[in-house]
Length: 253
Ligand code: PGA
Image (tube, rainbow, N blue to C red; front, side):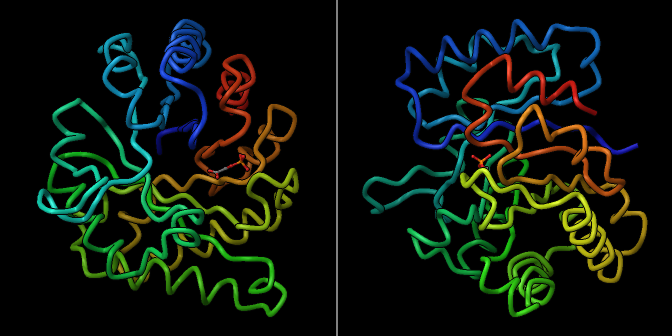
């Protein structure tokens, strides 16, 4: 059985105090027995990590994630944050290759490969994002692109390394737009991703990798999306900024 995961991506939202309040509400609501087998992840701004980490009970299925890290461990990289710094704070997961970072920060396949390696080396779980823009889907090139995103950054890892990843499929046209991909479109791509992984690493690795869907997931559509056989949860942006809505999503499996 693969893990069920509800991962919130707060992006660049909340000040540290409001962020702590939001995280406390999530932690409290996550005590609900009905979601005791769901992993809740909060991907928070760097500035919030230390204080939020302190209120997460170690026994619960609640993890804290960063939204990026630099590919080098230290050095003259003004303004950057490294994997060892995040590991020191007790960060569990790191989002890598989010489409906003690929777009605005011009993250390349090669950089994302190095970042993935560094995050794994520091005992954290990469949440590796992939997904196409609308124009790519309209040209029917979305499967090829997602395969290229995975193979160019990840397929040099061995099976033991690869098996530690979480993959998030986030069609760019559905992020923050209110337009959700249909459950057929989502299942089709998730199945394709799992098939692509199986071809490279074998069935048993493919079966154990959690593949999350991201793009306008809301309490109203989460159940339909999470009922797709190859969808193991969501990477949730806007709707994760409301604790009740986020936990309602986590209850939608
Ligand atoms: P959204 O963002 O839920 O606001 O569409 C998802 C994401 O970018 O991870």
